[in-house]
Length: 70
Image (cartoon, rainbow, N blue to C red; front, side, top):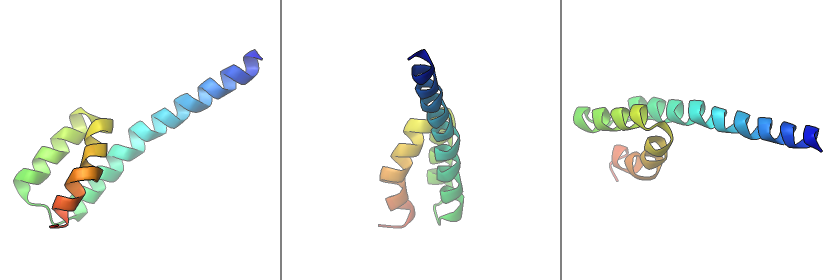
């Protein structure tokens, strides 16, 4: 039983670590490829750098629409 719980716990930590690395990276790449202007871009970059998960999620929910000009 302990081996199964340990393995599951390790897998969950690996997934969380991957999300913490990949999600902000994807958000930053998308920001710099979009036609977002300077002040907006700076605000989103700082938000993603200081709050990686929340900032990235907010960017993909709110900021991506603004970057596309919708």
